[in-house]
Image 1: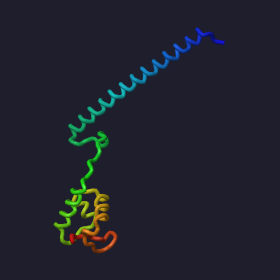
Image 2 (image 1 turned 90 degrees about the horizontal axis):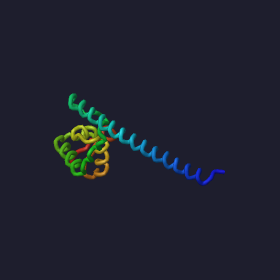
Image 3 (image 1 turned 30 degrees about the vertical axis):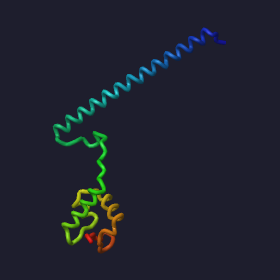
Length: 126
């Protein structure tokens, strides 16, 4: 049976092991941080040389398009085209995402005249 002296030595050694593990983890985190900074600076250099951003390089999120901007863009596109536009044509004319156009038109169907159905459906201003 271990004596109290042995138990205290075991506890000291366990505490020292825990301390070493903690310092090792901190060192690895520092190395990872430095590596990420190096990668970011290299990507910035490549982007500066090529003039193109590296795809996936920055975790920046796309800005959300405001509802007023969606409405203004769609109304402007329809006002400029008396023959009407399909959902795809509206998306192309406004530069809005196709899904954004679909959702807007579904929610605001009462604001537009339509002809046709399915892919042949065209939207007009009332």
